[in-house]
Image (cartoon, rainbow, N blue to C red; front, side, top):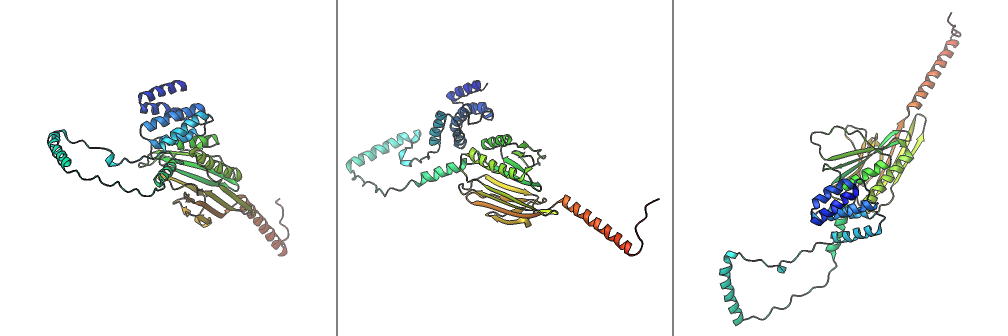
Length: 372
């Protein structure tokens, strides 16, 4: 089935029918990862088709996905095509082209040109001096264009919002959720690949609330099971690394740490999150945030560079990540333990009963009689 679709796509590409190539291979790309030879060939054909349709952004993203392929020849083809796509578009000077006059006035202009030619032959001025040539300057424009092309393809294939949520389910227990949103009805290539990666890491689709009348676009929410805190934080770090690998960028490993101290009546929790994004610059149309629940603003000890704001109607915090900076969040809060409070109340009730019984005996009533 895949070989038939590939053959049909190659034939459509030779005919110049780029739209047919995209319609044939876009559903097939979700079934074959770019790390395989078939998936890499699919991405290479899609890159050529997107390039033919004038969408160089998607073509660049397809080429970057091929870099993870184990086939050296396909990787080399992707690198060659990526070099062409990232080359700067030079602006042609106006004096390199000529403008043809209107045919209706060509006859009248012919007579004028003949008169001008006679006048030039009779009194030809000396040729003008050559234009001065200034010092050679560094190709700053090319460097800026290359950086912009790289930034436009990092972590997204279009306008995408990624919202990660960390929920405290009890002492030592956490749950992770990732929400992906984009304005189109279909997920962007990066979001689709990231969603498949999360499914392989144990996430499952969450029940989506009914969208409001003004909500449109693509929305997906994936949740992990409730895990012990060390496993959950390690999984969150692995999710961030997988997102960076899919975008073809290198990031510093994140630092997540949760410390808990049990005081019987409750647990003292201290959470520290550090995400170093100094290697990335702000990307238009892309945002990444981390939500924490249930947490109040009073628990925040440090939030840098962006503040952590309370979410209206919920005991939760909304912390946006800033690209080009090291993001740090430190929380410290107290969580009551139902088991510990229940045990303390039972102990207090028992002590009260013993005290009342001792008071009864001191008043001379003696021990209570057994029922007949």
